[in-house]
Image (cartoon, rainbow, N blue to C red; front, side, top):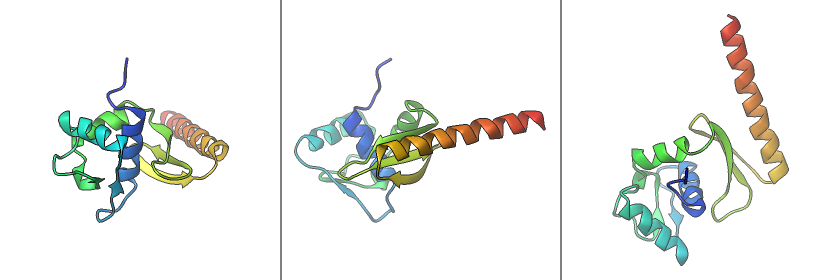
Length: 122
């Protein structure tokens, strides 16, 4: 099944989810087109033009972002180095090297399986 968000849009949303309420992500060139597509689909609030803040994200876009990805996943950082890691709809950390990011994701997945096993045994 095709994803609702493009890779660029996912990266934009992921980056915004890591920011405080007063920070923002600037978009330029082709990124503006992606932002306008999000606005056109009603996935972000329409008053964002050259920048995107956490307040611009609708619950719908957050749900789409998390439902179309694994419970624990990594995504390339938008406009920056490294990888952003999410677990259970929460931002966990940024890791600079891809192999290290993969190790963190695998460790979080192993931890989740271990916790599930322990819960079932109890």
